[in-house]
Length: 366
Ligand SMILES: [Zn+2]
Image (cartoon, rainbow, N blue to C red; front, side):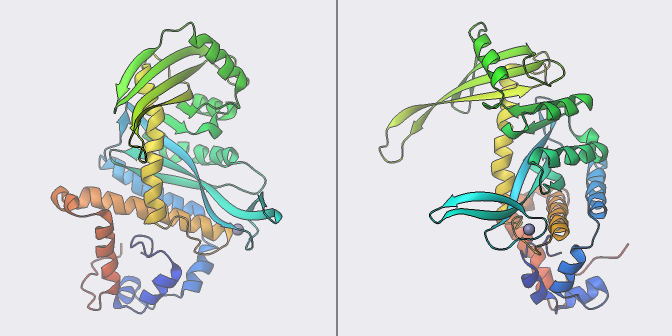
């Protein structure tokens, strides 16, 4: 309830614990904030993941619309950081060294990777996996993907990820599981990039226009110079040109950005302009989904600084986020939904917690 009503902290929640809602909801007195934090450190993450999976399975059974880009159902992966501190750390904290005016300082932080399924106009958060001490983000993602394949394998065809995931192991894993991969290509894969760059001179690019941006796209298929990758890879290069008006000078200037992607989707089923659209779709979700998660869902808040508790609170945030959006999408009439912001509906739910009459309470235990 703390998550669904976006209260944002155990302290804020505890202040509501004397309200009649809790007695009706729990059938007894509410526990203290401290107890909730302590219990979350002991709860099994498998259990919360099972509930998340059940909610999504039900939503799918009820024919929830899943976004299709170029005919594909899309899963996006993204690493998300929380609790960066130079002083406080726990047994599970990751460490990095930063340079400052006073020399090098150690910073402690946590990171988890989210698996996000795209819906028309939104998303469902399928699962989260923490990055553990001594491993990189991709290692955590491989655990996440293995589980997501088991629980939600039929919900997506393509996995889109950032440059960090342009790794042979990641591409091979998805190919083996019958899924396509698409990731931003950066300098780390020099051989592949050099070969693709050289071949661009031999290929006639296609020109596509989208949202006032002119894209000149080179599409190179069948590349085998990526060490460790089983099977050929396709590389796309998109030179994107648009006119921007500078705020200060009010002058119009031409801006040119070059993007590279590596993918296993063959051009016979996904032409180059659509493949580039797919690559860009990722940044769109990053801007929309994560802004909302951080700003309204307090995804960065550390409810209790303990490894398992942090994972449990993250998973509960995912569950609450999904249930809130499914409720809005399926139980609130479109006219009403369009008339107010999501925050308004969250506040309406929250007002139930503060209600002294108990009139808001309709929940019937199963
Ligand atoms: Zn920590």
